[in-house]
Image (cartoon, rainbow, N blue to C red; front, top):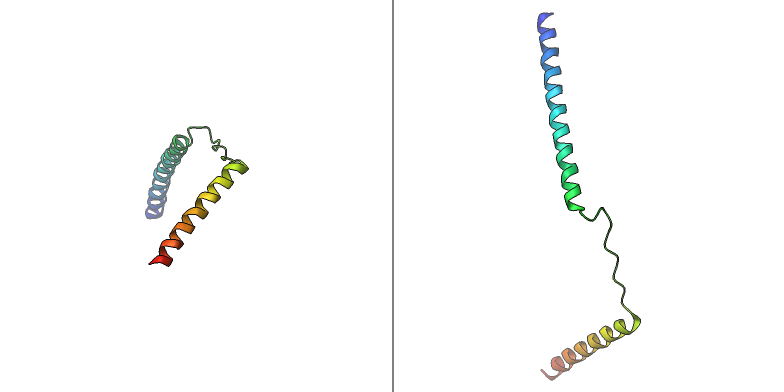
Amino acid sequence: MANLANAVNVLVAEQRSLQSKLSRVEAAITALRQVGNERGGAARPKRVLSVAARRRIAAAQRARWAKYKAQKKAA
């Protein structure tokens, strides 16, 4: 019986040690999450382009493709 009681005491001590380590890990995770979310968790608002801006971008891309295809055809 003495061996069984001793084994239980060792396991209880190990459990306490692991619980202590777990609480430190959880505290570290919480701290890192707070540092990563300095803006209070608020995401940056999505940028919205106007219709005119999207048309200019599309026209510029079409011009780039036309230039590329013209060079490819000439080669």
